[in-house]
Image (tube, rainbow, N blue to C red; front, side, top):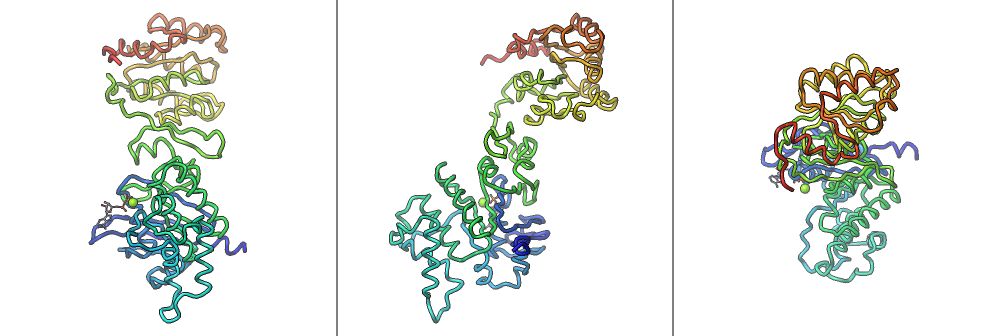
Length: 431
Ligand code: ADP
Ligand code: MG
């Protein structure tokens, strides 16, 4: 049993595939294990459907290999492949007046001998497939009369009737409303566990993929852009690179997964959107500022300790930040990176951070910004004396720099945008 479990169901090595000599898949290497649901994500045209066609032997590889349960797909007949691989295509053309039962029975074609016809066993398997997909009740109805969700379940039943080890699903939920999407994915998950099969499914919605898939293959331009658990793959940087969307990635409050919140893409309408704003923060004092300015300017941040809540916000938003090891003093190297970011920015902001010997160099970096004449803004929160753990050094510096910067109280943080617009010399857009 243990042995079987480690068996790879389907794998590809450097798979290249395309149409009429035009290469679409440009070297795909993947593997699928029993019990696993892998999601295929990527923009339209990335090659998801092409990959699914190749894995079901509808398309032949230009180069590379596909192994189905250890056997080269090229050495398997179409019937052999159909006994191992069940497909739920994106579009199923079924405008004929087939009954639901007939459609599911089509899944038995690879097993039915031309001479013997369908056997008792075939019928049993078809009934079982219909039971497990909740389609038995409309066995005698015409496929054309069914709703989108019902039809998808019938096509899934047809695939199950093939008794496949591998299920390939091409956007199985794309025409379904949200409740049917969840129902369909729950059903697929259940079948994978019950039958110990593996499934690869192209999906559109990253949040559904995150919630239901064990692993995600992120595709772009016929290549694998990233592969891993949803948490590993669904980062704001990956989603920006592949879909060109701005998102916030959050830990799911209930499940051990992440979910994404797409942000509007109106930033280009904001005045000064191409200005660079550098934020020196830490200890959660920068979060509000980062959210407020995100998408309005090109942001950078530094130096923040990993595990610090401000570092997490930078990660969530995909902000270019300098990270220091958790609870460690800022290194000389990171101080210099901070200086380089300051050199490169139009506005430098410091939040009301508590200062100790470990991060006083952040305040010194801000002093550098003041000295080279950058537009500098200080957000004042609790009095500096109360958050100075450097024997007065931070207090002295803070008060000195406050005379040469714009100081905004943290209660007035909503005015920060206006202050920045004023400092960079653009007039606030009327909203
Ligand atoms: P996805 O499923 O990720 O949206 P596809 O695999 O359908 O992407 O398409 C990948 C590329 O292959 C696209 O550029 C598409 O135009 C092209 N393509 C898809 N099907 C065919 C076909 N039958 N003939 C020629 N080109 C095709
Ligand atoms: Mg497709």
